[in-house]
Length: 394
Image 1: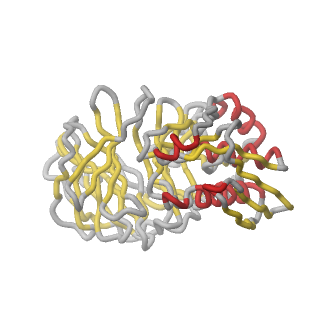
Image 2: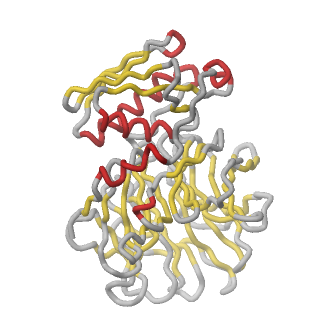
Image 3: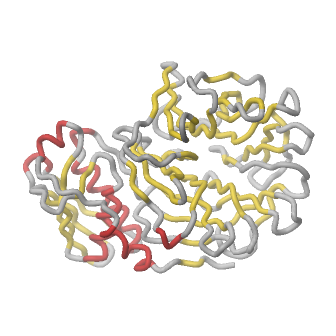
């Protein structure tokens, strides 16, 4: 099977009709809140549109056509000069890329770093890739995209239910679960070219998504031994070994996430209907509960940049996102103005932004300001289960 690219124009066309641009020329007032208002001026309309969309998702940037702060982009082939001549935000950077998609992402990163020097903003776009599930075809299939959504590719086409996408450690493949081969859930991996590789097959019972650690090993949940346990195997599924056993059949361990150094798992565990967050050594041993203040907490993910920080989903009159600081023993909610539930979040490369599921689409969420920006367009249909690969995290 080959990569199936959705037309870029089809995806980019709605950008200017989704409410991403707010006119606000009170530059100083916004700066006091850690936000820069900027107008994007580009000699290439296609590149300018992609960069505007990417920047509009950043919590520290407000794209405002009437702003006196002008971000100027001059393109020559796959290079660009990115500059701002406003005294408070002056900078100039040369950017080189392999193609237009990468150029848009690297220009957006140059803008974030240049405009955000006083806040030490980190690159976000070029080193973040997003895998997710879409029902665009009428079946749940695995797709990948970027934060400018300049290129969206379908990786599977099994006309079956494929779910649980997780990136490999090096970002070259995506693990996923499907029953297309045997009518039982099995784990495969694919790069979108040729047949998917078998990873964990010929098992019976429930099977959870495969999380790839920094050394390439995978961790996954399985009820193959009658209880829902955590297993570790090689990158191709070699020698699966149970490392964390559930105490009884009513207890469920699932969704393990490796710490950036590979020493620990964060996972969802607990009696059915009352899940909580736990941490354990990746070699096995007892589960250490993490207090969240909520009776229903799931889907922990380690921050690739900030040590000992986790994002998780909690239930309280809907689904919301929270951040755990294991070192400080603190928990905070990510307060957003959006009324729709947020869940299944995964960190982006800057350790500040997340991609999460919101309703039937994916959204970029700023964990600092709570800004929420829709990522996937209506044309992609129902989207869910985002997983981000970040270069820093590996």
